[in-house]
Length: 188
Image 1 (cartoon, rainbow, N blue to C red):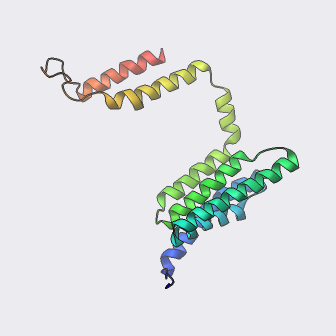
Image 2 (cartoon, rainbow, N blue to C red):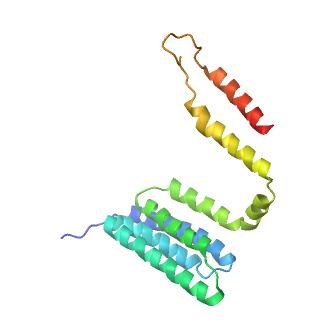
Image 3 (cartoon, one colour):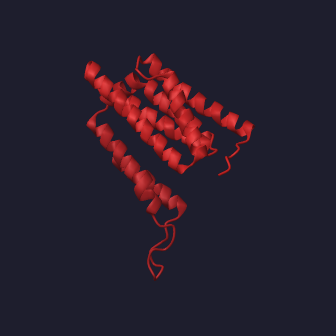
């Protein structure tokens, strides 16, 4: 079997991006005084990138390795201070997948994903304060708005809905008017 040769410049770019996104998330974990930090996250992202280059079987084996690392980390954490590192575990698995995407040639998605994930990790206090301050009526209204905007509105017809063409078709302006009325009703 002949070994595969990878061109140096694209591989160097992929390595740099993978290590960069790993370091970004790992820095936040370091600042939060977690057991795994900048080096572990960078290595796991690099592992994902390299595994995707080698093949699907290696990518699956590497994912199993990340799961074992997460299990070992959580076992140590439970034995040491009786806590689970759920968020760090999830972040480590996400960074592996983002590294995998880098290896597959994607740049925007893994970089944007790493930035968004790091923001979510860094804003723990602010997000908890925001979620704790919501009233049940505000949550209900947000769910209704999501239902109207992302479930009902997209399936409204933009053509006649009966075979006799007697029911008016729902024009774009009519759909917007209907959506506006539904939102107003939901916010009351």
